[in-house]
Image (cartoon, rainbow over all chains, first blue to last red; front, side, top):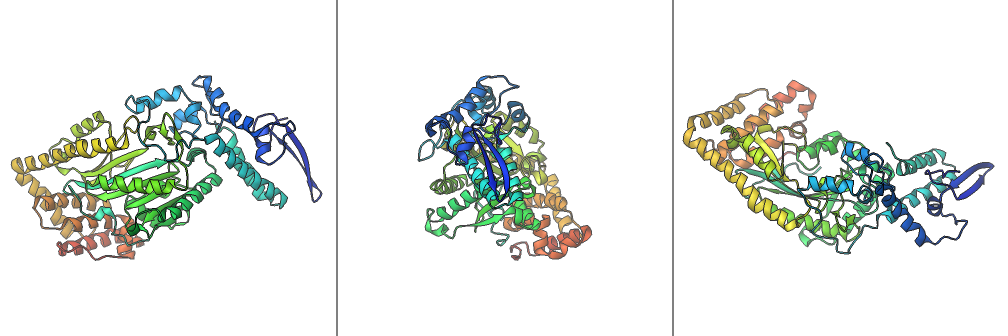
Length: 168
Length: 360
């Protein structure tokens, strides 16, 4: 059984009955946490975050120009080449080393940033922030379902999907 | 909408004979959120909420004289005329003015500082100044960026620096640009050479309204293309102290060469345009811009006695949305618009040494 919100295997399965209407929920570990469900197997949060960050790397490491895909936002490398726009901060790592060459060519051979950096140090804890954004959408979705605002719920579900699934 | 003529575009600054305005723009993205191309409306609204909060918070951070803050304009709710006014004033790109979805502009009252929210990047912090005063714009842009960073964190990568939607901006995320008036270079048929030299220096050359636009009235925007591998200060130094003086010097030489060798041709060029603007009963925006450009050259060279500020203001006022502010009849039809434009130009040039009256 796949997760309702992405292609990963669902680990949480629930049937919600509200006012006589039942709905099935199937979620992967990541989305289950986002929606506030306890995981069936005790899995510390710390184990989940590196997983999310790792998705980008593993998928990018295939290195194939046609198949590289950002695990965080779902953008494919060919789609990036077509539009010239990256999908999220994690794309920079997901598309390495293909992207590195593109950047170096565009930047007259430069390979590293040497300018200012944020005062608070590295703020690129990007996977966690994407995660937090999803979590918020999931909470909104839940409360929309609870309040029987089905139109709103459908909209939120669509938004979650554009967040999760590749468009190309 | 604020008074239309506080814009840097209508003011005079260093090297104003050649440099109309200069701008420093910083691209920043909120850490952890997807970039605009993958952002749902919910994400865009979240970006706007975060930036608005940061803008409100930043008011307390900046120097006391700027403490009145930035006004917040949500473009998806703004009337189309206001959006076009902003584009004509070069405060937003034309693409940003006409695109869809939640997006905003935070704008200082003097219009020198602004933040485009949800353009290509979550934030485009920009500071504009008259003439070649890039140093002031640079300092102002980083002051604003620093104030915004107090309450939000920007996406930053240990190797690539500030992450941007388009990798051509990655690193410093800084774009330094100047709008140059280069009629001398054009008259001397050197424009293509300048463009080639610019490409060798890693500069982008664009038209009057930025990316993809035409060079109307011999106005060209020059900007740096590399944002990685050099610190912000040295990018500024290179653009402001090395590149800009070269191009400005080139234009001044071209003008004096034209005066020496082809004085009659140059005077003819300027005075015909002056006569046309004083006589025409119908004018299109492009036609007006073209001839105003020529009397701008004439004013700088002393061929006509017209204040540069008068011409700068007219260059704005002949644009369609600005014209409709000057005289609402301009929206009543194409011919009426051209008639109103011609009449406004004649009126302003009848008193060439006093700037045109401010219209609200």
